[in-house]
Length: 79
Image (cartoon, rainbow, N blue to C red):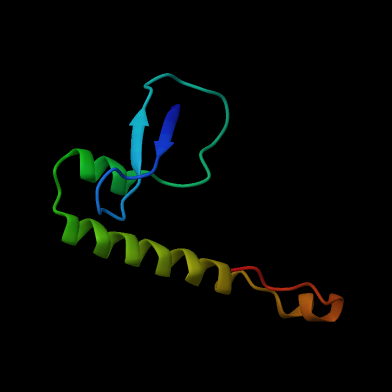
């Protein structure tokens, strides 16, 4: 699905996403579930908590996929 991503117009930390509802080739590199929840009227407090949890899960996955052998090649861990 295509989308347009804009900065928030208010004090919200949640991005403003306009879904274009057309199928485009490829895979989205991230989820827009929090944006859909905002469109559904979920409270800002819950959205911000969901955003925190999402970031923690993303960082945990990067850490879990970290391979110590990369140290032998001086490849930095990118978080």
